[in-house]
Length: 539
Image (cartoon, rainbow, N blue to C red; front, side, top):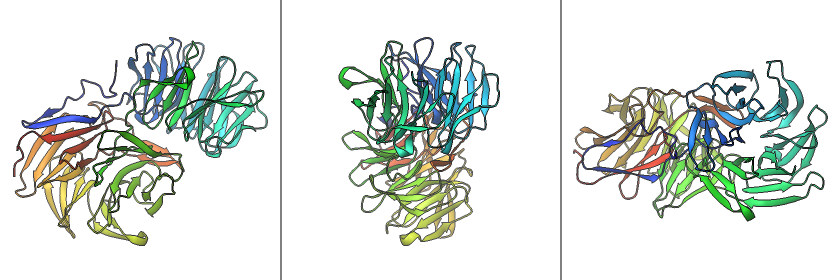
């Protein structure tokens, strides 16, 4: 049974003597979980947009195998469907196209220039797709490559769609909390149901009843087509993305935030098939009480001191500040996030994010200074900025080579990794001093006692530098950070208005209140914890 999306033979951590490493959060089986569909072989197929991967799950054994791998021909698959010949069709949400994977494993592009291609369904070998955007369309595609037929247009964020027994196409309208429908051969669009909490997908059960998942509440609701009477089948955690019925009628649901997949049993009981995990993780921060905050792209997670994991908020919910990359804890315990749109926000779940800066160039790590000022790495411009009250900004240092990770010392020194420069520098005012060089792609940095730690995402290694003597030592190699060796995933461009891109990677470090070093295992979707068994650090 596969429990790790990272190939087992890609990297095995090797530690220098005297060090220990474990998982604070175990690896993820998938890169999030989006569209679901049962294939001709009775197995469940799962699209993973953020990992550019499609997996096949044996729902009896739980075994997971890769069908279309990271770095393969299909990029950012969001939804799936099969035709009668066993051809698998996948929407590529960031790549504006739909691809077809034939039973022999070959792949071809069926249609392109489809902005934010999202939901897809095949009905009697007719292919229907919609676009998850304001002004989105519902289209019929043709296997011979003919121009698509427009069925409906000017829709607000239509998502995973299905054909009902009445000959209508049904689709959730995510932003308005409604389900729309249109005749399969075209006609006016009708609102079939409303008052839903972020509906993300619809399917029909064996009795022809519509079933919708609501990401905002975790409700799974059945709606009778004739009476429009709604019945809640189950309530699970928020972030559910899609659903599928097995050949024997069992209901399965996916979760875009944590990559979990569950079977809904009798009386709505949730039975875990694929456990919850992390999409990234990316940025890390530790609160004064020891809680670990994890910026996880589509959401943020909190690991409490007693080991419990929660996700207080996520994309599409009220006020969430976009696709988050960096995180920092303020002096009063408030949270700051950097996002893929180049913005920095102060965020409290349930409230509107308060933006301190916008339209910056590729933001990465952030940190809070002793006086409460917020420091942020602007990788695209090569600067570190300090953000103060009333949206004030000042340049701390410039001329850096893709500044990525940042750590602040009590004496005012600012340590910054330069991902494109392969080094870490110490900035004091406008002065820059090289602390460590010869790295491949350094990302996160953190201070622990008298040492600075840096993770080299490009070389999958962790290094420590004595702040007293400047001596450096290699601590760990073969860490599950970055893509597996030989794989070059394409940078995802994001979605305008929802999560603008590019969706760049970030692998951060943080220091726990016990002095351990926390590592964002973005390759395998884990949180790693490293600590010395003995006094092995050089000074």
